[in-house]
Each structure stands twice: as structure tokens, then as C-alpha cells.
Amino acid sequence: MPDNTRRARDEAFWQTFADRYDLQPGPINLENGYFGRMSRTVVEEYQRNIELINRGNSVHVRQRFEQGESIKIQAQVANLIGVSAETVALTSNATEGLQSLIRNYNRLQPGDQVLICDLEYDTVKGAMRWLAKHRGVDVIEIEHRHPASFDNLIATYRETFARYPRLKLMALTHVTHRTGLVMPVQAIAAAAKEHGIDVILDGAHALGQFEFNLDELGIDFAAYNLHKWIGAPLTLGFLYIAPERLADIDPDMGEMHFALTDIRARTPYSTPNIPALLTLPLVIEEHHAMGGSAAKGTRLNHLRNLWVRAVRELPGIEVLTPDDPRLYCGITSMRFTAQADQQAMVERLLNDYNLFTVVRTGAACGPCIRITPGLTTTADHMKRLVTALTELR
Ligand SMILES: Cc1ncc(COP(=O)(O)O)c(C=O)c1O
Image 1: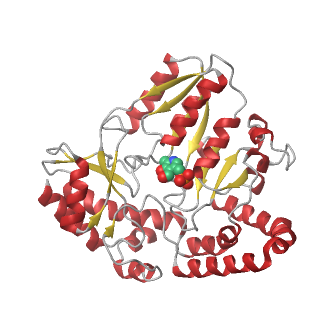
Image 2: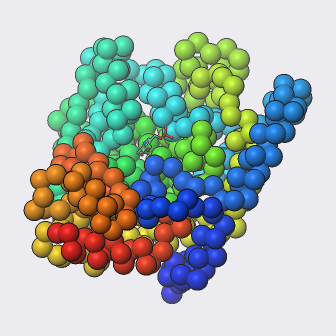
Image 3: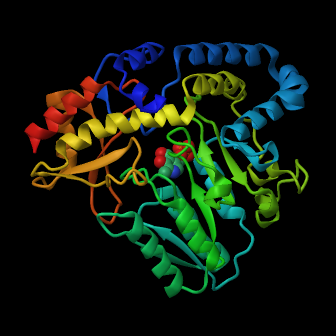
């Protein structure tokens, strides 16, 4: 059994890890998809950096942060996904990165088509629809088949590419926040390339849940946050542009602080959360020390499988996310098939079982309850969830 798989089942190991986090007494949090916790040592480092920047003010920021610290941090962030420092620009979150890429993509002509699906994040959908008004393009919106399979996801895109020959740009979400479905990005990007369609990848939930290589995936444009599965303070993210594609993204709204050849010109120029950025080296060190995305993702998958395997076949329950290991990660959604109101069931889970979950709507297959274990979730929490689902169905 590979190390990560063995370790994923080792509750004692994960308890020592969970002990590094301060938790508020209260419901068992199965909604860890919103944002991640910082470890206690990261919180302390963040507090030290707040004080440092408050004391040093612009003297520290102009003499040290702008002169070298921020460049080093940019390189460390790039290293997280195995790309070079010149291909990433720091942002405040994934949304800022995605919207900058969409807004500044300069290869669209009036009459071109752009593509989104039902599983995209709403701010991405909004930005792609914004292109209709500001670039004169048509927005093609598709819905995925349910249940999803590796083949039908690719087939849906292939059919769409054939049906809409004026498609030039599409959004693709690596891990959808609605159901946790992991998209077969490599195959979809390859099919898109055959039709000359560029892909902007939303990696918000991918980073830290599994390893990937953007070159192998065939992705030229992507954006991420660091405050979900990497464990950074809130307000941190980055975008990626393949070096040979930099000219296809304009400087952001006439941005002039950086040279045309500098990727940093592709994001809004503003005062960042400097104490949070200065905390990143420790965050990244801790991420690697615990085995990085591979170890974290294997643990999250294990917790996911503990509940999914126990309830998948139960009458009254539908698990929306497939069990094909290529298509799932720690986040998985379900619904009570005999109940019309999933929100009422989320309240029952909370009030009767002390389990905190959330309803997600917007997927073509209907509303669902999203279950997202985190790095402090235990096998016992999953047992409690199985009991709750079994009794409530
Ligand atoms: C799939 C997806 N994309 C984008 C975002 C936006 O991330 P951020 O809040 O860092 O802007 C989220 C946030 O939950 C998300 O789930």
C-alpha cells in the first residue's frame, strides 16, 4: 500500500495534525470547501507579520517587500505547481485571477462564441456573460448529463465544439464547487485545442487536493486561491499564463506599473495583504512537510469514501458525484430523494446530528447537499454522518 494511502487511514497521525489547529467548539464542520483553516503556527506567524508591517509601514514595504520579498514569494507560489516565477502573478483570490484572464483575453472578435457550463462558479459565469456585452460575442451555455461519466463529459464537449464552430474561448472548472466533480481537464483541453478553442481553467478547489501539471493538462490560462486547501490566510491567490501566451492577455485596464512583458501587469495594481503574503513561506513549508497535495488529497478522498461507500446504495439517498477515481476528490454531494426541500434536511443534519453542511444549487441535475470534510475531520465524524443520512432518508 503506498505511503499516502496507509497514512490516510491512520487516525492517530491525523489527530496529531488536527491538534495543530484551534477549533471553536460547536457543530462538526463538513463545509470545509468555503475556505481552509490556518494552523496555530501560521496564525502566530501571521500575527507577527501584521505587527511587523504595522511597525515598519512603508519603510519596510518599499525597502524590503517590494525590493525582494514579494519576488521570492511569487517564486515559491509558482513552485507549488511546478512552473516558473515569471508565469504567475499574485492576486487576492481565485475570482480576481479568473476575471482578469477573462476580461483581458484579447483574441475575441464580435460574433465569436464563448462557452460555459452549468457547473462553473457564478463569478466565472458572470464574467463570461459580461463578454457578450463588451466584446460582442455569443455565450453558449451547456448542461452536463447526469450522472456524469468520464466519457459523457468529454462527449458533451466534443458535441458542443462540433455544433458551435465559432467557439474561441471556454471556461473549465477543474473541481466544481457544486458537486465536487473533477473534470477530465486533459482530454477536454486536447479536444478544445483541435478546434482552436482556448481554455481558462478555474483551479480554485484543485490546488492542494491533488497534484497536476499544467503542461501535461494542456492549460495555458488558470487561476487559483491559496486560502482553501493550502492553508494560507484569506485574501491570497494567483493566476498563471503560459509564457508563450502572455501577449494574448492585455495589461489589466491599461495597467502601466509593470513592463508589457511582466505578468504582474495582468492583474489590478493595488495594495495587497502584505502580512498575509509574508506568511506564505511558512504556509508552503507546512504544506510540504505534511506530504503536500498528494497526502492531503488521499486523506480527503479516504474520508469521502468512508461515507459514500456506506450510503451510496441506500434507498432515499442519491450520491451525485461518481465513484470513478478520475472524477472525484474530497468534496461530494448528495440529496435525499424523498424530500423536496434539501435546505430543510441541512437544518435537520445540524439540529439533530450537530453536522454543519450546505445546500448547493445551480447544477442542471438539481439542488444537493455538499459534504466537504477537511483536514481536521475524523473517521468518527464520517460515522456520525452515515448514521444521520441512514436515519434521515
Ligand atoms: C470553483 C470555484 N471557483 C472560484 C471560486 C472563487 O474563489 P475565491 O473566493 O478565492 O475568489 C470558488 C470559491 O469557492 C470556487 O469554489
